[in-house]
Amino acid sequence: MLRIPFLLLNLPLVAASGLCQTVLSPEPSQTHRLATAQTITLPIKCDSDGNMYFRNPSNSPSTFDLIKIAKDGTQKAAFRYYEAPDLKRAFVEDFAVGDDGKVFELAQVSREKIFVLRFSSDGQLEGHVELLTTARFEPSQFVVTSDGSFFVSGTKLSHEGGGGRPLNFIFNGSGKLVREVSLKGDVDPDASPKVANGSTEPDSRVRFGSALPGQDGNVYLMRATSPAMIYVVSPGGDVARILKVKPPAPRDLPVTMMLNGPRLAIEFSDPDATDIAGTTIRVVNASTAETIRDYKIVRELSQALACYADDEFTFIGDTDGWPAIMQANAR
Image 1 (cartoon, helix red, strand yellow):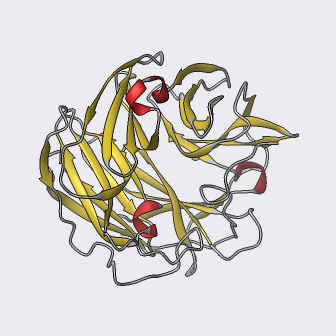
Image 2 (cartoon, one colour):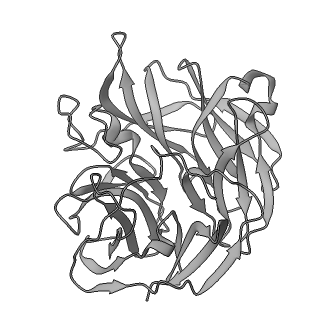
């Protein structure tokens, strides 16, 4: 059976209503058994060729491999950060896939140092740089921008413990801080709403958000709030626009986000539901946030949304007790 950590993916989901709702077929259009990985840790990301990237436990204690899986389910590469001597105690917070197939991982060591690791497309560690900042913060999201800079979003840490205000930085490719990015109307650290994982920690709206590079060169940063707040940030750190995407149902919260050219797909679910079936993917215009279509996902497809490209959703789920990749039409 495919096992996915509860806090990261095994969220209770429920049916939601929306305009122009389309129910996807219970039968996937294509299914490929997964050659590896019985445990998958979010996030799952895709490259332009449709390869999928996600983490699963390695053979070493308390470490994870980032693996690259082809659309037919075969493993193409593994990225192992802990093979570097000064990174053995590191924890990878997020990762990014470049247009050239290179992979970057955002790793933190003992909440003191934060590194960006660079790998070749076949899994060779090519080097790493330290992100140079005096701020103590917990990184959550990481994007490599179109000009090779690093966008990092996280939460400030206090000496007393607990979460603080959200922080957003741009570093150059050498790790030097270029700019701190302020986002108007960002989450209030004094408020503690219930979020997707059932926690009341103030920083969970940041931690359980998403960030992706857009084909327009901008960074799309989503907070786990209702409505979903998406900040479109230029490589230089200017906010191009703010998108507010209403949930399909009042109790729904965003779980993950995918980009497909001018369209943005956000997966919503009810955090208090008792059944995994019925999560809704809302597809909106990436410029205006206008709803284009809702997709009510059936149980056979709802374990993990992996990719959205070429009018097709890709899921990783369980088929007859075996982990598998499944495609379904998004037209």
